[in-house]
Structure formats: C-alpha cells, structure tokens
Length: 194
Image (cartoon, rainbow, N blue to C red):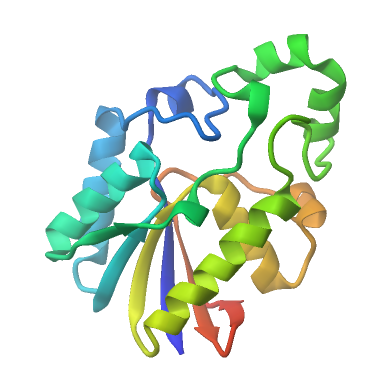
C-alpha cells in the first residue's frame, strides 16, 4: 500500500482576488509562501519518500518549499496540472457571469463544468487518476507528497468516494490553500484515509 498526501498549493494573488486560474501560471504571494512553510513544518515528522508536483508555478513553488524543509527533491508530473478553464482564466466570478452568463449559471448549479473551451472534469480525471496510480506503482509501501490544485484534488476525492464528478461538484466544499487530504493506493484502488 502506498500512502499519498495530496496537498493544494499556497495562495496566489489570483486566489486572493477570486480569479479563475486554470492553466495560467501566477506565482505564490507572500501569504502563499507562509502557508507553504507552515505545511512544511506540519509534515516535518512524516516519513515522506518523494515529492511530486504539478508543473504550474504555484504548485511547484509550494512543493519546493516543503521539499526543502524535508531535504527531498521535487519531480514535476504534467498530468497533475490544474483543469483548463479556457476563456475563464484570469477572470473573476463577476466577470465570468457577465461574459458567459449561461455557462456560469451551469457552473454555479454544480453541473460538471461550465467552461466550454476548456476541460471537463471527466477529462481531468482521465489524466489525474492514472497519474496517481502510476506514482503509487513506482513507490509501493512508501509515503508520497503530491502538490497539486483544487480540481485534481477534487477528482481524486470523488474517485475514492466512488461518485461521479458531477456529484462531486454538487457536494463541493472549498479546499483551502495548502489543505491536505490523505489517501491509500493499493492494487490501483484509491481510498481516502484522512
């Protein structure tokens, strides 16, 4: 069994301003760096074998801060990148609602997605879940830290709960910056353990 600590990245200015980030690449802000340092301290006693990250800067900076404290290297994994939100990237919720009212209404009603020129949550899951299983296969009986984003974290949670991604969107709660979820991966099966 591989234990997986899945962490969301620290805060960016776009998080603070409530902007959709998607595949955009803003850096951590000062609060995000402090959150990442606090995460590093919280994980200092864990027997983490390896740190993996989304290649996007906000996640890779978070991972580097934590890995530096733990004395580990960081390896980027492309499939762990955030969902592509298409034309919504960089826009606030108010801006999206004004420019894309029908799509925004679908999204706020917890439909699987609203952005029409980005990825669906099913497409996101088709790259994230195999990546998670692949990391577990590479590290049997070890504990891994995976730093990623809200979207990938939600699809892993949905998969572990055995619910579809539309249902996961309906149940969605805000995943705070540097929040951690824990999973066990065994024989390809992913289950939440904390």
